[in-house]
Length: 350
Ligand SMILES: [Mg+2]
Image (cartoon, rainbow, N blue to C red; front, side, top):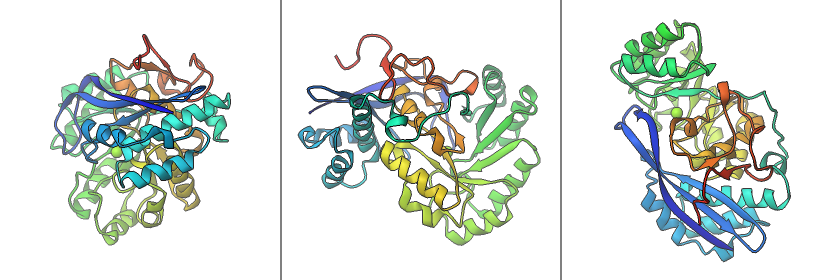
């Protein structure tokens, strides 16, 4: 087995800003490829400042991986080996896990969703389209550009929240909306005030992560009991082992391949969350079609999808799943097996 990887700078269509972060015009990611004599698989390790996963730390971890200890035939044993190298490093582990899953499914001649026994329903899954923090004018412009998407997600947690929601509603008065506060509201009282204001909109589905990860359980339970809108954990929820702590505090959880460490742990997280009665959502970072397609194969385990990271960039080196009018589809994917992704131009690994 051989492992190749390289960093790649993803250019954003619009400057991307979320609560607590600086505006970004480009975001790095690390692309990875595993291949043996007969099979190849690709993966991706998104960079996340929130989780201290940098392009350098990801590549440092991948340099420590001995690919001879990885096997497309033993994903679980391969993941145990990665765990022995170092704890954490979930983004780098995500890249290896996704490449292993891609190769294993390709080797079996199946699409990843079928290889995992999940299947995939064409025309059944819709992703939201995200609008980052901006001025009211910027939100108006982005809402107009996103007119084809039936569900939007608005980032909040700035002093302009009220102006921004009003601007969005000028362009899309009754469109279904999700709101993501990215840990912005410091106290339960501040969070409840904002959620009660949001509920008056009448078309908001749920609110993601109103308060910081690490907020005491009693404050989260207090808020859940009073919140007029469902609350989804994002920064507070990473993997299956977090389900027990989240179940009393949230209505649902946002599972991401980066946080879980790949496709197989994300599957476990989604299944465990559903078993505990939590609603499930699959989210993403700014990513290429490699990870967005990987996430789409898990759609049957999710009540809501927010897998638009590849729609926010202008130089995606891969093609795979599509989301025209928000409808998540593999119908046009040229590749039939594995992740169902293919390089758009020359193979970036050659
Ligand atoms: Mg979020």
